[in-house]
Image (cartoon, rainbow, N blue to C red):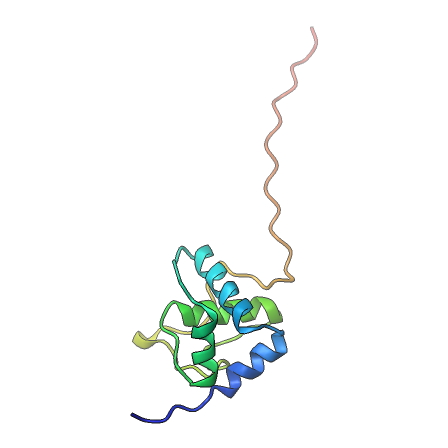
Length: 120
């Protein structure tokens, strides 16, 4: 079995974002839930990604990139994370509905007011 090397790029980004393995796992699960995915990522999994260079499967890899994108306020690609690009030629852009954490939430459209009836 080939010896795996630690993922120093991912470790560096987690340090920059000031995320623990537990908070990273929680954030990845939250992003996945927003995307309609049910992940069971835990701190042990994150530890394996960082310390043993294990590669998270999809959609965990994309959710990880999106979680760090939001936390750091900039685009994070799979390559930035030290991970291989997605199979099938897909690019590694974050989910299209995502937005950085600092971006304002879209304001809901106001409900139309009922027309006022003239006095007669």
